[in-house]
Image (cartoon, rainbow, N blue to C red; front, side, top):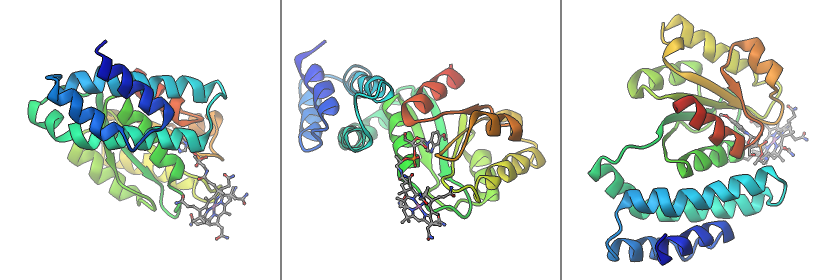
Length: 211
Ligand code: B1M
């Protein structure tokens, strides 16, 4: 791997968000293309972060710094990725469900999935079931991700899946859910395709779904 790509991976792992944009620019100046920077610099860095987070060797504040470092580099290469039409891993629509304003975990999941090469369409928080349905119709994603942090808003996940069914598009998309009160058995009960306990598992699951 080129020296600058190794440095970029290391900067992401260290959460050095001040230097990753410049490194991405240097990599471009050295003649590397946006796809190489994404696949051989940013993604290996975030993969490592995911492994360390799952193993309990990194914690949420460090992962947020790493995700911010990756975002900062992505801001440099994203327009070039779009221009060159480089294939991304797939497309993820993500949002926090209706009635729920917690978005830190959802943002982390989005960033980890972006680090894994997905295009992310973030609908934000307090997202109505119909808004998820319209977004699925408009963007045809591989995965629809829903986050809920309140026991009272978990019901909106089920309502959203029902709304997808009523719109006749349930089978066009894999539904992944998560958030502190959410469990695997709840996901099974409401007919979601998958439950992920944390952002790293969510990005792994998204990769499996898109494969
Ligand atoms: Co609120 N809040 N909050 N809160 N808040 C909790 C969730 C709570 C557990 C605190 C408590 O009482 N101990 C409690 C919920 C109780 C319950 O329902 N069981 C609670 C409450 C009650 C409330 C209010 C009702 C308080 C009030 O006003 N009386 C109110 C509700 C507002 C609303 O949503 N309508 C409220 C408000 C807020 C703030 C706005 C102040 C703020 C949110 C700011 C924001 O998000 N921008 C807030 C916060 C920060 C929290 C705590 C302290 C932290 C949540 C967090 O960000 N965790 C939380 C207590 C706690 O969890 N310790 C609490 C860090 C984040 C990285 O973890 O979101 O779990 P998490 O995400 C993880 C995984 O769950 C998973 O991956 C992430 C990364 O590993 N994951 C997914 C998440 N989404 C996923 C989606 C996936 C897959 C995995 O697939 C798509």
